[in-house]
Image 1 (spheres, helix red, strand yellow):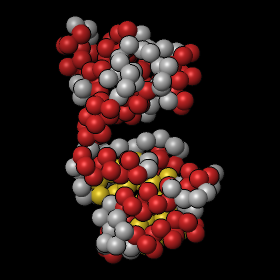
Image 2 (image 1 turned 90 degrees about the vertical axis):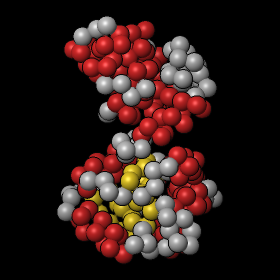
Image 3 (image 1 turned 30 degrees about the vertical axis):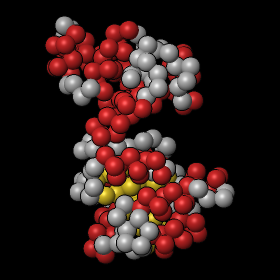
Amino acid sequence: MNDIRIIIIEDHDLTRMGLKAALKQHSGITVIGEAATGQEGLRLLNQLQPDVAIVDIGLPDLDGVEVTRKFKDAEDPSQSAATKVLMLTMHDTEESVMAAFAAGADSYSVKDVDIKQLVEAIRLTHEGQVWIDPAIARIVLSQAKRMAPIAATGDITQAGDDYTQVLESAPLTERELEVLELIVAGYSNAKIAEELYITVGTVKTHVCNILNKLSASDRTQAAVRALRTGLVR
């Protein structure tokens, strides 16, 4: 398997150098370029076409949101689609988070993330999955809930193509939908059990089934996918 090709666009020299050094310690990842400004980062994105770009949202000349938007709006969409953007920032406000995703960012992480988590985020992002730092997941879920167009009835006629086929072949049961709604609301397994008058073991079974049916690796990803497909409003 080929290494995941990374570029780092970060204006703080120590942060950029630290990220580069830390990522070099992990097999399967190769840093092929780095930039300290948005303009230089945009040039590298178009020139190198990395697998994943780690982009700081607070760049001095052209911020990370604009870098991402300009790159994603490139004339050749087949090229920009091949590169995934992982936005890295100190900001966890709803405005900055949603601006990043609106610009086309694929994943979002805060800067103080553990390096092992960052590596996992890079790998999942490269695979085409949305990775959202747990510290800001609630922001995305809250916004997505307000924007979700479909009622939580299991109707997936307007759902995204990525999950429609899976959900049609293995639809969620009524109880699984109830559990999913509580996952989106941020309930723990114990709280879900208390709310639905079932055992924690039964909740775990339902959660496992939900993750499998939504092809999600964790509860946060399941919640985001549920909201995107309209399973939960």
